[in-house]
Image (cartoon, rainbow over all chains, first blue to last red; front, side, top):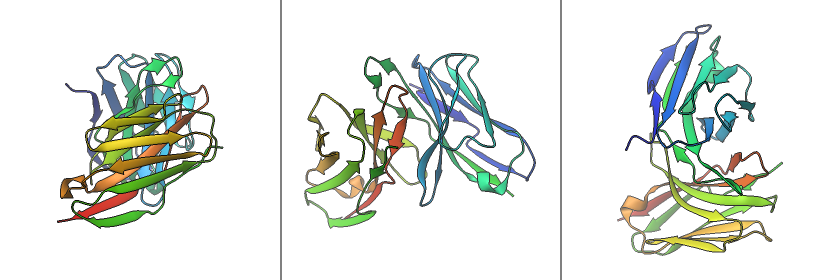
Length: 115
Length: 112
């Protein structure tokens, strides 16, 4: 019963370093999302994907890149980390339905600190 | 642009009280609305999903209602318990791109 799994759960980076967050889901969901959560700002959508090989920008995409080479995986990359990217990152997935997306399932989060 | 508002930001109640958490949204053309629970340091757990054609959904002590025309949803928690203490977020899906817009959440504290 893995659901949505995020790795790593914690990471500390120095400004300018790069890293990749991995999200894996075992529910055969079409849609996958990356959010960041910051105090007072709520959850903000970074990028999302509506199927294998597709990606789209969300509300706050700058400084991030994503890839969805396999249906079950959605990768979030930071090419040159900045202190403003210190946040908790959440991955989510859902199945496609006739009326939009179905129920969203979230991972446990990845806490990133950029020094 | 869809905006989702949850007021108040925090709420403290004594154990056993029935309570209502409110969520309002600006664009009534939604596909569905979800209520989530988030415990400190954890991810979000889906509580209830209401499709746009539905008026309410129930799960145990939780009941969520949806009034699209007025842009409102409520989450009713019956006989609150200290274990219900958490942050409750609502989110709506608007449009065919299936993106969710979240409220900032209501942090609930149930006092023993």
